[in-house]
Image 1: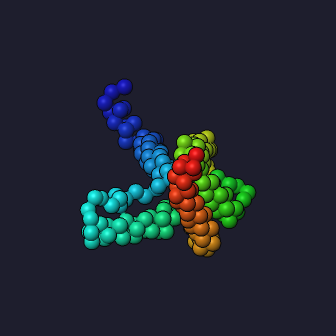
Image 2 (image 1 turned 45 degrees about the vertical axis):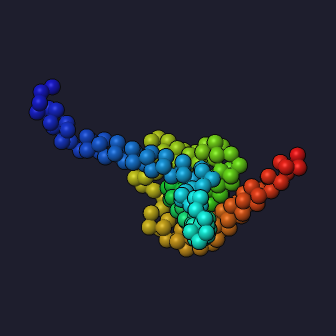
Amino acid sequence: MDVSDALSILLSNEFLYFLLSVIGLSFYIYIVFFFYKRLSKRDIVVFNDTPSGEKGVLQTLKKILAGFSFLIKSLILTPLYVFLWALFLTLMLSFLSREHDVNYSILISALLVSTTRLLAYVNEEVSIEIGKLIPLVFLAAILLDPSAILSPPISPFDIFSVATTSAPKVAVFMITVELLLRFAYEIINLIKPIFRVRG
């Protein structure tokens, strides 16, 4: 093989497709790793909002800011992150599913994400395993059958349209679950010292 043959290979459509596949696969794995590691943690969003040792008005202001940051994390940022991950799973499941409709995929996605979040409050190691299960299954399915992406049973625009229609209901369900989990976790943390003292 001479230089001209090597150049012809590098300039061929096959090499371009291979290169794009490597980039796409690497990007997908990186995104999935980043997202599921975050999703599987109890505290998805972390602010440095612990009041320091100041006294007086400054300490009071820092406590107020810490309370606001806690509310922002618990009521806005964490539920939003969880909901976006559910939409991502909905897209993947809709591509893989040849028989079920998008609403079924939305239900399964919300169920999986909510289960992952529940386990994150109980045992983060188990939550991590569940959190990466579906994305890795999706990756294996695409590698074994690329037609799932090349000729999906439903277009991404249709998936997005149905998901947008069902989004308010799913968002209410998932945000409520997340808030209940956080509330239960904080209550348990308040009660634990009492039982330890009595024990």
